[in-house]
Length: 638
Image 1 (tube, one colour):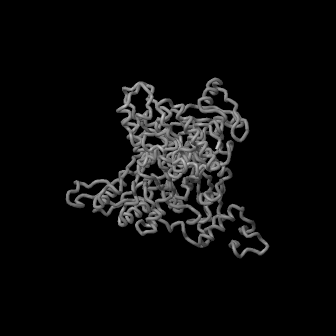
Image 2: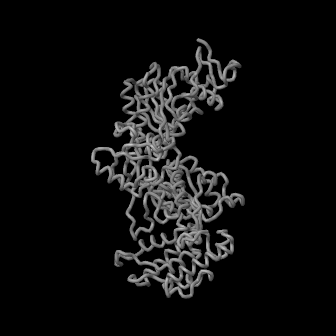
Image 3: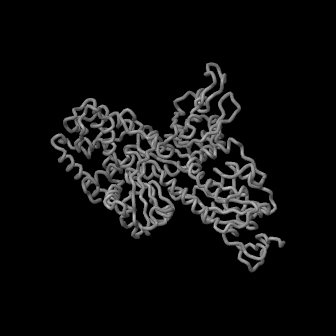
């Protein structure tokens, strides 16, 4: 047998990406994988297949962390394995970093080389095994077959494997599907088999997004209802929650701003309009024009599945919110975009830091994320600044039986352990002591927790969200916060704006009125005059949303509901804080005169500042957000 010419000693006339294999060249994708394998420090004679072990704890953690992928892939893996009809095969699914999530095979009859692959948590990336189908698929993001000598490692030359990528509802790569056999020969339709199974998994994941209506469409009417139809999941608010692979191809490239977009921007009609059209046509698809400009045919079904952990918003549940952007954020465009970015980060399993002044709604923000990403899991919040330092360790990590005097018999689970399969919010993380930061860092790295007084490790699967009003980067510079923990926690930072800078104060007021109005009030909630709204919008709100909420509740308790609330009904400190330039001493004589006066003041200030909005806001003593609101309201051309 001829020796394989390694990369680096190839003939000078050959292109650098080409690798000589016997008497033929490797395909470009395989050659590129060989190059990467060399860069990872592997050598063809390395023995990596058996030089690997996975603990039972790690296997369980990985299976639980990839629960959705596991649930939908298991059915297809069973189907693939049965179609192969031999114990010399194994079908498996890996996540986006190459860890085996689940597999189907015969552990008792399979060859020894396959048995070492039948372990959740075993890594099949190019870093570990060089060129294999699943490792190469994760790099190339396309179906790939690797046969015998195309494997980089010599010990894998009697393997045959075929893989296909798996894309999530947001267009991101979530893993790969693979079939691997030992001494089985070439399977002609292997790539097609795996690719079809991958599409079924992707369609199932999108089709079962909770509380979503499904739009099924294609430019070829005959493909609606088949494996190759496009599927768009739309929530009750008319926003896109997920798309399958065909939908991405028909509507635009992956990564385009489709997730979270209003359905009418992609399909030319809102959700109710689409559902009405489909109902009128009964069994026949309706013709629509999608964002790309192409004509597509569409069927739709109204969502019936609901997320079990979601609760209806009630006055007794101040933290309740929807699965999408919560109502008290959605009207502020900047905040809504931040929420959507945070949602994508958290769905990928990365931690985030929510930064904002006291009272800006950090916990409400995190609870809304939890309802979207882990609706069936628990939500645990702990204020690191409110618990005495001597108790916070037992609060976070728990303790065993007899760990200290006064401890419960049989011990107690800590907050981290209680948050398993859910979200843990560490509020005021900047006030955590340095020794405790070290323990938290270990938990985040190992994904296990050890109770005080015990030696055994408990596997955990949690999403960690930290909240603080302090500047963590500055604390790191001062040596008061661990730098390694900072970079471990800070996958993404969300800055919640203070209420004085928000552009949706009026909507927020109405939201709070709706939530705190007692049931005895008539169906039409109390209204505020323009003068009262103007003062609420212009007040600085040092206590942010929490302070506004108390003002609204106080007005509900003191004011009559059968008349609009006016300036006189507001608390004294709100009335007395008005900027002089925006006051109208005759506001009570009519809101129209107040509006006219404010409009004149703003126009004059804009002229004085030559149209500079920042300078105008400073001159009027209001925030830029308030100025923008007033300009829009009065139709002023800046």
